[in-house]
Image 1 (cartoon, helix red, strand yellow):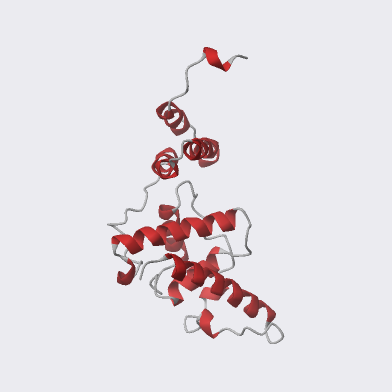
Image 2: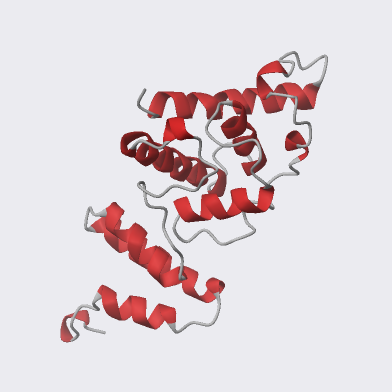
Length: 189
């Protein structure tokens, strides 16, 4: 087939067609298509709002953060950096680059003073979905057991690092250290 015979498909047409699909699963390939096109056109940020529009999601606005994000992280610069770090974490989890899970990310965000300790798992799921366009609800909440969040008085900072004493806790501590370093390196002071 000669592709020269047809005009390019406008992104608005793709978005409109994708919005007609009945489920998130059917819309997801269109999100991936738009993201790939935006990267090809060297406009990856443009894909975020289009992906959110396709999925019928609201994107988090750096000037209107959820109340669960603590005040120290509400400046526009820090909020923007926070959102970018969460998107980086999502890529690492989704692509299985690391053994990280969202329950460990939540533990780090609570213990490092980014997220209110009163935040519930379902709300955490919603907050992450607001930060990551195309992320479907429940995928965050179902990533991990969240038993690391059950002990309110236990911080990842106090977990043992010696795997001979407690292998699971030592492994989780190592992952939390990696996640925490990603936040601290990426966020402006």
